Image 1 (cartoon, rainbow, N blue to C red):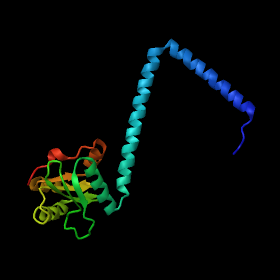
Image 2 (image 1 turned 90 degrees about the vertical axis):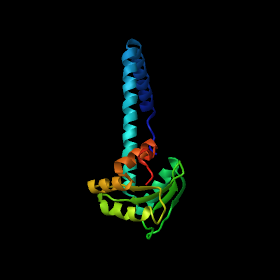
Image 3 (image 1 turned 120 degrees about the vertical axis):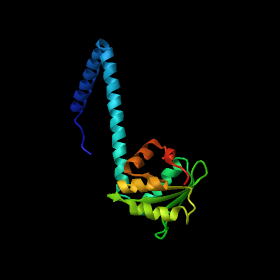
Length: 186
């Protein structure tokens, strides 16, 4: 480690003392202006921290593998009130990546799709074909990091499947409020 010359330390300390004295004088002369500036600085800093955190969470979801994404969604479900959350962890899961109980006791079957692109109606069709009859779902959810096509949204609405795309997932993760208002029995 480099040593700092003692004279440089004295000059730096003197500079800090002078800067602090001038800041005190300005604060004493303009307290309202300084308070308003402090409020604005805190608000900007808070917004910056929130945006960086949101971007970091979104980026971390984008680099997950499929099984990691399933565990992420399961953990999010646990943190937001779902009980008995179980990740099936099988490739031949017949559309059920996660099985859980909603806070009101309904059986929830979740299919996770870690996609960068679009998730279309064939994914909704397959989930609809197995979730209710094979897995006994009372609520069915499709959660994706991708975008949902208009056909997928239309079909899910007709079948009573709750869709959670990348934007809804980000909102769920940041607010810790699950997409329960849209949940309904089949």
